[in-house]
Length: 354
Image (tube, rainbow, N blue to C red):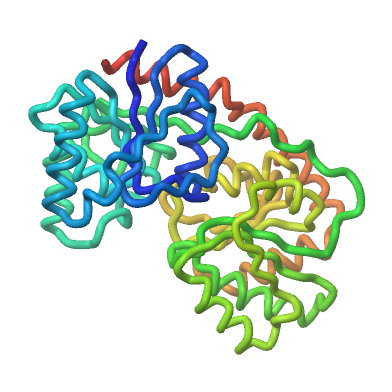
């Protein structure tokens, strides 16, 4: 029996948190101790296995760099022999430094483009390189993300895609509603202005379509202001966080993810798994292109390219046969990325390293 701890700010409704909820459920079912140690907020927006321990003792104690290092060190010292996972790059650096002198073994999961996941300062990249020497191992989501690093990291790493939730609804069969959907955190990296601008152009030709944006984040107010400025308030709806998101979007005509960079999008994989025709930017570090074969099970467009985005939207609206083919093929991903297969890869990697 192993003690496995995920040290994170909060369990908000993001992709990393969703994966943590799946992994902890699997680990406790396999007889391990799984903890989620929160240090910023006690918010938990995912339903967790009741055997998963949600540890809130660090909340309110980690308000600056020094206190974070001290409290993380004390926490890991007290936990004794354990495996500590970091799913956020900067937090991972704190955890690695704090782990010195403890029995904790730290595994870093890089979930964004490594070139973008920390501020672009040469000294900070060097600090990451040094501190990554302290890690027991690394889990990457894409080959490109792994290959960003040198041999010292790669030899301790594995590439494991995200697991697909095992309770997703089956692919919708029937006439799809004329709505476009997206769900993710409303953050700059997602480049929702590209989607809104593209939709504004698209709906000139297809005025019957609506755009539903699910999620919360720092960009919500600026995006709403943008929608108002473009005079498309009646066509764009901000839906907030939705626990039953997949049932809400199942019959949509298309799902769009316009990110500038993206580790491996849970939103994209889940949309594919339920058979939504997907348009995604071919963004670094290569998550979308790992799973989307253009015009076979989805559409790939260049990042920051409004014309290509609008053309892709027009194509799916015009060509129903192509849309249906993409939908059928996309749904096959749910078998390849089943929870059992992916979670077992995590557990196997842990056992090989520790």
